[in-house]
Length: 363
Image 1 (cartoon, rainbow, N blue to C red):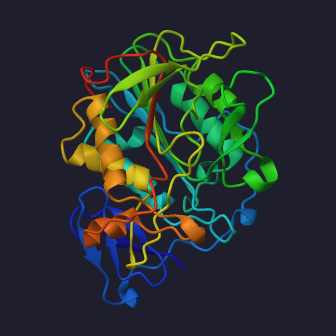
Image 2 (cartoon, helix red, strand yellow; image 1 turned 90 degrees about the vertical axis):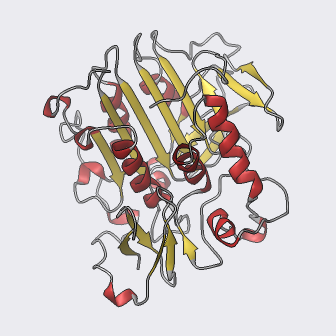
């Protein structure tokens, strides 16, 4: 049973898996030690449920989502975000750090980038509102809500932490012949969300003056938004923009706006979940490196951001051999490093190419 514990420093709520006696916060880096789990607050009623217990909600236009009318827009435009963390509890697909990813990302957006809490839509298994359980239907509706009615000056964020996959592409719009997919909570019965749909829903409608950032912490996520340009950067920091526009001529860009995506790995790579051998657990490696780059002041430009994320993961290479995931965070705590080869490399894709070392990063 997963237990809830507040970070001893910033009070961000984190989940403590069975057997863990300490947890590291990706927001403030503090380590919270738990002497006796019996002193922890009771778990969420959803803590041990599997996705088979969730009845999908009836079709709706997502009237249960937050409304922009509930708060005053900032002088620099309005901000809204969809944050999705899925642990697939009680199934063979279970992950450990994804709901913590979601909570840490929400904390970051509110406290660092001044997103109003009322404009952040959270989808996790522990939500009590059935419209906020991360089923395929609800994630689809949340993506529609995120871009609906957006206008110049708006800043939008989509964060997903969970399983990603691939499936054969038959339309000729993928260089490698595979579509990338997000796995909702009920993907076993309802299927996955394909990158073509994600692009059509969240990329193509973005109008001039609107900026959308996606942070995708999942396997095979390099081109999850099907954006036309991928920043191919080597280990020295030199880069070129690869044109991933479909040979078929299918349009994958925006309606004049700007979309930039950070992803946990290339399309042919896996992205590690954190399950620490040292009994310390926190977030996924990509989300951790993303937050750490910002908190440590290494996110001045998009090039700085990408370099910092890759350096963090590279210095603490995650060994996933033999079916065991060794925590990046555990290695950070012990100051150690694992060999065995780099298994994931964060990627940057965009609707239009730009100079990554002069364009300033901002959400």
